[in-house]
Length: 215
Image (cartoon, rainbow, N blue to C red; front, side, top):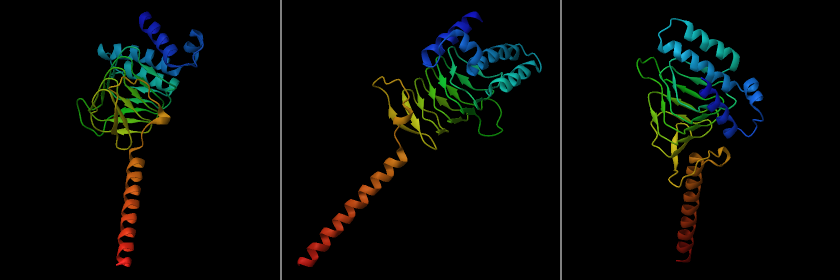
C-alpha cells in the first residue's frame, strides 16, 4: 500500500502542474482518494467478502463523486484528473499509466453478462466527458478526445474523436500529449470538403454556361 501511495503521488506531480505539495494531494485530490478506496474495495471483492466492497465503493462515491465498481481491475499509476462524474464498471480493465478526466464513463451497453465493459491498454488518455462503452479493447497509447463516444475497439497509437468515435490520427511519430484544443473535427472537415466540391461544380457550370453563350 505504501508503494501504491508513493506511486500515486509521483503520478499526480507528473501529470498535474497545479499540484504544489504532498499535503495538498492528500487533502484535496478526489482522484487520489478514489484510487486508494478502490484498492481496498477490490481486495475485499477478490476475497469474496459480502457487501463490504460495495459499501467502501459507495462511501468513496459519496466522498469524491467518482464511482469505481470494486470488481474493476485498475493498473498502476492510474490518475483521475478532477474526477467528478467518473463511472467505471465492474468488468473494466485499465492498464498502467492511464489518465482520465472528469465526466468519463467506462461502461456497458446493456444487460449482458460476463465481460461487458471496456479494456484499456497502457498509457491511454480519455478526455473530459468521453464515453467508452461495451466489451471493446482500447490499444496502448490511444488518445480519446473530449466528448467522444467510443463503441468499437481502437488500435494502439491512435487518436479518436467524435460521436461515434472515429480514428482521425495515427501517432507513429511518437506524439504523446492529448491537445484538446487541437483535435481534428471529422464532421467539420467533411462539410468543408463538400463546400469546396459544390464551389468547384458551380464554377464549372458557370464556365460551361459562358461557353454556350459565346457559341
